[in-house]
Length: 328
Image (cartoon, rainbow, N blue to C red; front, side, top):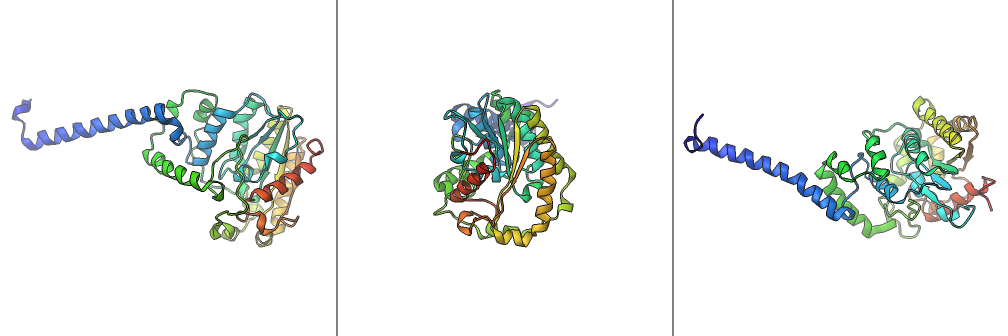
């Protein structure tokens, strides 16, 4: 072996370079974990999935999920944005509402979320506000680490969630996005300023409407024949889980812009809701159909499927009035 002092300069330089790279690579995770311990509230939640919204909702649930709740809201951003919790008439003033909605959740992913959450808060009633897009297949949320989610929400150490998902680009991007969206608040679709139920209602007066999202219904034609069996099976799964928990599942179709309903085709959407109603009813659940033609003008929408605060209030009121034990 050639003594260090006799090695060619190029070899010695390369060795030092490799050692320096190795030291930096080892040092970065240590610094990151120290930042997690010291500044956790300033960082994005652990990257348990590709969805920033899912990850942040996981952190909110970890901190706020009670051992029992009166109403559990499940679903996609339709659930997150389109319900006004103040309009839900609870049995008593101390009743609790928990909203687990997150961006992009399909019916199948909603069923998996329910499976994780239902034993933790034992809800009396489960509300699933939804629209036809929740039954279309998407790869948006592929790779949810449900085992890590379960441990994290139950109060396990936060460090594994960060250490096992070291994606510096993800955390860097979302630190910036979080600060920007915090300034804009409820005037942007990307607001995750959860209220005490985990809900986010969108501003109705100065909302920053994106024309691409407003006209988003034009991008695809909904066909019931394209809905995969797993999506419909998920509805049955949710209804069975609710029944086993002595809860009732209430699935509510959320209105879309009337022009979107006409464009997509009311016949195909009606067939979807008939199939959903059959699945839910078979397990003692309830289906409520609310359409855009029931007094939901353009001024109540943030885009073709998401309601603003005024629309959410009207939608929730219609839903409550259709559930005897919830109505005033």
